[in-house]
Image (spheres, rainbow, N blue to C red):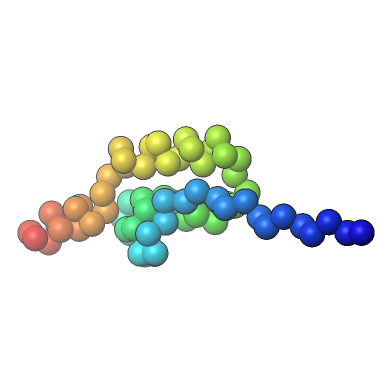
Length: 72
């Protein structure tokens, strides 16, 4: 008898489905990750993902920077 495979474990992600990268900062406007971080997210260890997620609140907010630059 074959045991059915368990479904894949969900991966925690900061993605908010607002995927656009600011050319000046290199950060996604939605989650503040870089393109290499986004591309490699599934291959990172839980510890690597946790370290990136802990750093996100301290990264510059690209939307605030754009608003400031345009006087908004």
